[in-house]
Length: 224
Image 1: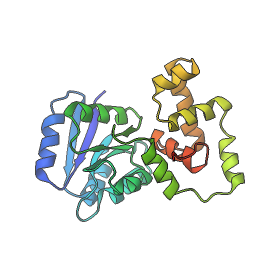
Image 2: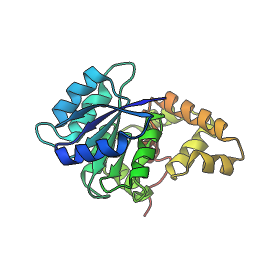
Image 3: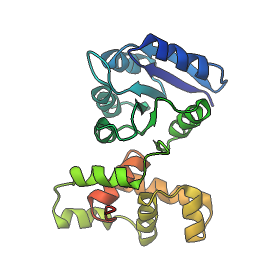
Image 4: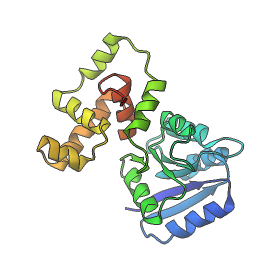
């Protein structure tokens, strides 16, 4: 399967570098390069990329606002957004997750990790830079804790089966599908099915949103 990729960065040298690295892979088709967030939104609407590699700090419209617009678009195949940041604890990372980004990577990521990350997100999964731990997600959840009643929260969670709740808790603990399968003593395909059901029932976009949801609803407590 060939992934359609849109690169959005206001620095020409950065865009060129990414194109040189990613253009050599047969399963990645670079369909466009955007010079700012507004340009990224326009190109996403016309080019329909599978993944947008989006810088956070850009003129005209920043990457977070652009990501929010792109992920909110009502179209059959909305692009998934990977945010690029210089620092692993960049204050904007929190906003990027809230904007619907499927994850983020550091700009100094190794080429092989960049390619792997794009493939992961294109496949419908979510991605966090290796240096970003559960503490980051927990902190995000604490600062944006959902103002919902206990009844509504309980009603949302009761839509899940006991096993699906267990899978959600393990997702929030940062475990991969393989690790969840080992913990529950089931196949990895079974875990994938459970994850899909969790996302569908809770109307969540991907694993990043599932982790945030688990913290926001109190299903998992933030690390101290």
